[in-house]
Image (tube, rainbow, N blue to C red; front, side):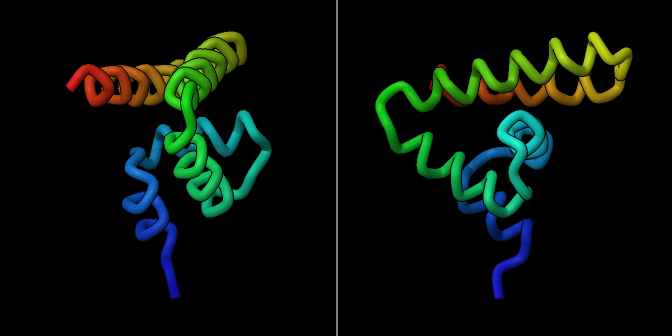
Length: 85
């Protein structure tokens, strides 16, 4: 049986990145991991995920959830850094 941690490792994203995607897409974390894995394999998928992360940062800020916004900002930075390699 796969755990959530297995799914996170499989899709190559961090837990915070995956949480942001799950919130944005209204999916359970495990389903969001599968969705993200498939999206990353498509042309333009990285841009879609980057947009989702930006949207969720803005949403967290609008809701006054500074802690969540910072976690997502860190996740966005890591996502962009990985992309630059």
